[in-house]
Image (cartoon, rainbow, N blue to C red; front, side, top):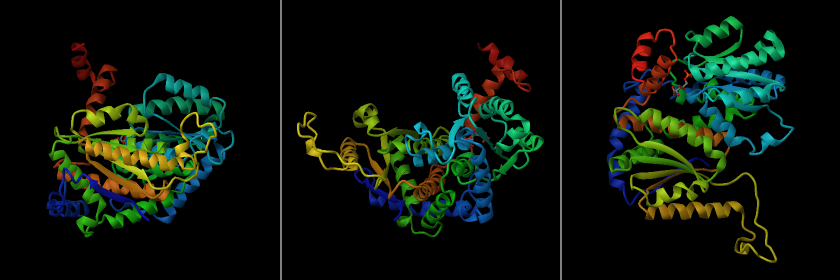
Length: 446
Ligand code: PA5
């Protein structure tokens, strides 16, 4: 069993012929990715990564995870963007929904911080952790990002007050560049255990480095299965695989054709609440990779059926500039059936005996048909089950596709110059040393 891509829901807008006309270009772009001859070729380390992680690298991450598990009931994973979303996507997808309400749990709860600058968020986190056994994984490739740096300064102080300087050292791990950045300097000075983010892997492609693997292992999930899934998907989308058998190439081609036909918005939808953060991870991967040079599909994510009761109206009848990609899970992990009721006051007896998932699947099918009828092309990505192995397949499928898709769009999918603009203004407004001229300029505009 494996991830399946279903393009039958775009046929009324994109013909087989149009799709296959992109075959040559797709092969050319795939070859460029593999040979490292295209744009952004210093950030292609993710391509062979699933095959390159060694047993001793897995073992080192698992050892570090066990050490944190021993000392901590809660581990705060600090990071933002690519240093945050992959781990959260996996942990939220695999953790039992109500685990946080249970007193007993086998692995520490992973809490996320450093992905916002909310004063209430951080002070409520400090309150919560003040009587808890906790540790920190501080993740930043540049080692200079403001949001995680603030969270780390606050939580490091709390931890040192709780367990002393030496105790804190045993409970803090840094994941950062091998040589550069403030976090590298700080971690070396304090003697923290560290993991390195390879130079040639950008944040949004880093989920299979210690950036994602360490928090996922701490949360008790099987990182080898995750990587095995990615490795198996790599074989399915590798150079040399024929275009019509390569799901990443087909998805890349389909979305570019839809874009050319005026479908400027793509929503990633799910009918499974645990996939919410997969949508967040995907939004970053596609938005940050393609939205440049005044081009690119706008990416949004929706959780169905909840959002069918809100955004569903816009999707069905709003401006016809949208297509959807639905991540579907074929089989749920557990079974729950709807009981029969003698009085049938709620009128639900027509569903008696059915699994909840049967109803969900009809909601999914009904939505797909309604949206296609309403002019919203529908792509399906089906995972047999929600587990680490298939999430690994999904990650690599989307990563490979965005590389090809970005080249089809003729942008560099591996940089993100646009995310610097807000930082420059924020530093100028906060009078960060080195930004004196910018400070004067921006203040004159206020
Ligand atoms: O994809 C990216 O490069 C970004 O989202 C970064 O991951 C994010 O800005 C965090 O950067 P850093 O890991 O340097 O703190």
